[in-house]
Length: 452
Image (cartoon, rainbow, N blue to C red):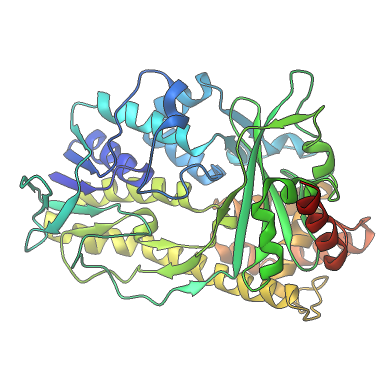
């Protein structure tokens, strides 16, 4: 089969690589003028107007790493050689068992992921990359698309890898109602100083905190970098001052352990604060109804970026597309593919909706009991479960399976023994405030603005 792939981000490049290695050919068209580079040095200077979140943190979940190991192990090796790092959470287990080899996160920034995939795709005999061209419309019958230079790309199957943002006029997509995540993200990247190392602590992955009215999360990157994100309710307009570098740093200084992580002795900032808003959960897994048109990545379904499903699902979808193309005719690829990936994407979309609703309610002042499964279950299955994981092997495996996409949601939800363990461990843990009360924090950050 011949595939015409609209969009050359992670989803489009992975799809092209997957179908080519399954014996097909692919043309990948990207609107931004980006080309394959031998080395990663320029990966972070690439201008990606079509991907506003290009520089934002993208966690490489264990499922994504596992799929990429199966699909293109050379791409992972390329990233590791260029400074990506693996974190084996099985090292925290008291005893190992089969399957624990998958409990591994790959820490790498999005520009390097795209660089490694593009480099591999450019070297793949069955893949042609067409940068700097916009798609104007679909050929009737989804047998290809037209480009802005008048060229027509013909194919047996068209892949929609155009992401969550703009599509060409009239581009067919499944109708869907977006649900606002209710949050704005304020991210800043840092690089460790020569004498520093990533903080070790009681947390399962990286430091995170909930202040009761907002929260923060942290992500490791490649080459001794890390990101810190403040997560602020969309409705809290006063806290939007965190978009200012000085206000942001003032907030970090009063939220442990961010005070240590962002101190001059530990790390130096390498970006300004990068806001990201307009975030929504959208499910298009029912399909557009156009045979031969296949949505992958965020074009199929996207959720609150705090769950970091994007990179991993893009790879899962690429692998499923290659699988569908091996067993069906071009006319049946779309149906087979959607039957494969749709159920899991829908359940994760539902999971995100339930979590967002619960967290937004908590941050608006609603008192919720997170200590018991029959209290606020979406928050119980996240915060207390993460906190309990380092103290119990079974909890660790189940929570990594849940947040790392290794398990279906029901594996966690139907495990009553797991819930019992979390309920026993949670009250025994020492919990300290993640930061000051809201009014105190506002005084601190507005004071930083005045003094600057």
